[in-house]
Length: 199
Image: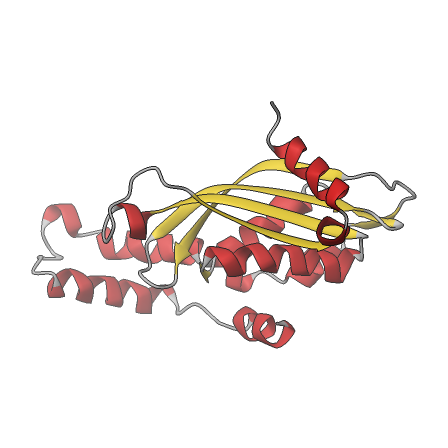
């Protein structure tokens, strides 16, 4: 897993000029005229959008976390709920988006709370599948924070399933990654699930 993660972090997004050229070629291939008024700036806009949507490849997540680890004896569950995320399905390059819930039980160290949504963004702004994305968030927290356990639950709508193919509307996909206490202790897992789905 670590080798795969390192390989994915090393990917460099092509420069804006190359992306602009590719977007223009796509318009021509679709039978459009990239020089007509409504499309003149489209290749440039597409290039800028793709740079943003794949910005996670250029984030050093180790450095992001290392600046925000603190010694603290707190030992109860920490939960950050309802983190919005947007990603691109690597199979069709179509968006999937939703919310992510992250929890961990500290073991002498805590992480700055704002870093958790930043981690979710860093991993989601890459070509992804939801299953791997869920695991990557849990794995990095376990590796860098060394907590007693980590739980991650993601719920997302996939445009590759809603706009094409099955055309199944409003059918969110839910994935989870439970590590440490969240996997071995049913009470910890139940507490997490109750906190992210309050009655």
